[in-house]
Image 1: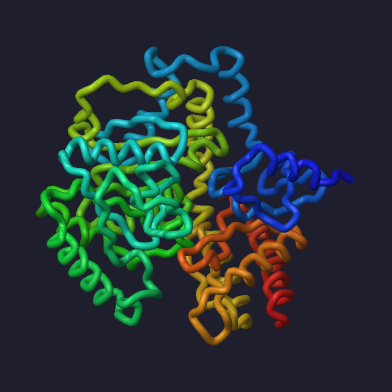
Image 2: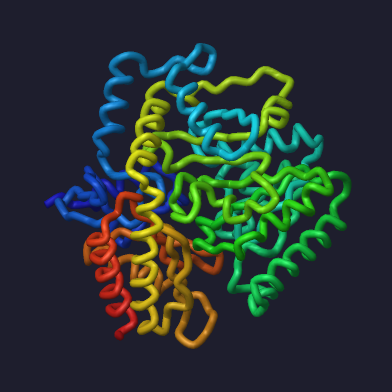
Length: 433
């Protein structure tokens, strides 16, 4: 048996205190296959979090492993100063899939860097540092992205290079509009947007929004809300940035991109992506129409964005996803999983809501009979699920009381049933049902 405590002590002695670890006794994952991972003690887990929605297709996917190995054997690094065939091939595919006309693609190494680049593009194009963001949002950990993050648990400073205005609408079942119908909710959020714009001085550069908020607990507005926002934005010349770091690549099942649930006014001006496209390799990026992408009039390169090895992984991973219709699998298996979770949660008073789309589900835990968040219960269920062989995530804007479920998109029906049953036992063990 491997004792995890010495490694944990080494972690604490050289890494920041704020670098979070799951579990009272943190686990070291050593290898994975398909939808499962193993820890250093040999315990096997069904992975329902995929390295924070990053292992999108499967652990140790042979097609991706082969592409990485072959490219590493030829050339690992060159930078964007040289022509890069895998980068161009992946950019061509993403541009075509994006829905943005005359699209250009710039690769980064993370979602944070992708959103940071989108903010640079928007503020340069509009000559304004004013940004609209959604309440309860999360867009990364850089100085600029924490300044547009509407979630106090992830925004460590009030200092900012941007002037940010926060808009209602991203959380359907909490807040002052929760009691309204979908149509009334959308109208109220649009009115709030108009009111916020009345407070801004000068021309706002952009609205940035996650179609489904990830760290915020998988919350989302009614379909069509961002399309309604787009009508207002267009009147003012304001850009729309869709943060698809967690919602992209078919995870929601119904759509390839989250913005497509709000498509009545057309695609976003800028789209950001990361996580799943690399299946664990460090890939992020920005898609924008050429006029916006090409507004930068100074020198700019990326040393590691578009690395030949990561691009080879992305090409192979995207090809696998499309050839095996993993979006369709997310819709089918995710729909069954959501039904199962709702049935389980109907017998657990502490579950306030089960929400989500495709293979992106959240269970919000509160003190029974109230709307008061219960982060201790969420932590306890996380622990109990791990003991039962299931890895989950957690998040939420109200004291981290949402269990986040986002397995690889190749999840089978049998694995969905297995995971749901482990989660049911974990919920009942904590809440005594």
